[in-house]
Each structure stands twice: as C-alpha cells, then as structure tokens.
Amino acid sequence: MLDRGYQHDMSPKEAYDLAKQAIYHATYCDAYSGGIVSLYHVKETGWVRICRDDVMGLHQKYKDGCK
View 1 (tube, helix red, strand yellow):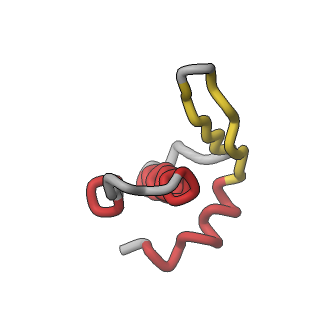
View 2: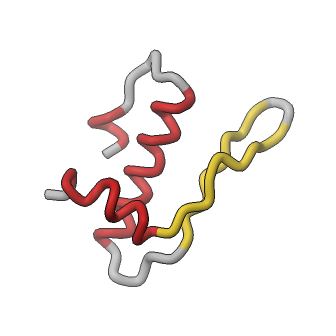
View 3: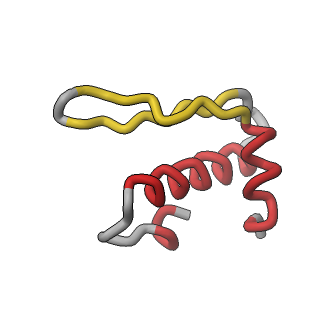
C-alpha cells in the first residue's frame, strides 16, 4: 500500500490518508488486529495527534480498495 501510494511531493493531508489506508489494509489482512487506529505526525517540535479512528469506520471508507 505504501509503496504503491507514496509520492515525494505529498501534502500532509495526502500522507495522513495514505497512512490510514496502509494501517487499515494491514489490519484487514490480520485477523487479530482491529480496534482503534491512532495516527501521529512526528515533527522536530514534538508529535501531533492527527486522528483516532475505529477500524470499522476505516473499513467503510477504504473497503473498495481491497483486493
């Protein structure tokens, strides 16, 4: 997912969405994963929480990209 979707000039919003998709797809492939996905942006000044999403909500958003 990351190899296919990564672009050098991505905006932070695009990178956050790609990260959520990659985490979702990893949990989709692992029967023991699930629950809550917490996404953080690590900067020189510290980390910033971007989101805290339930995997089921991510499933509804990204399920059509599953193959």
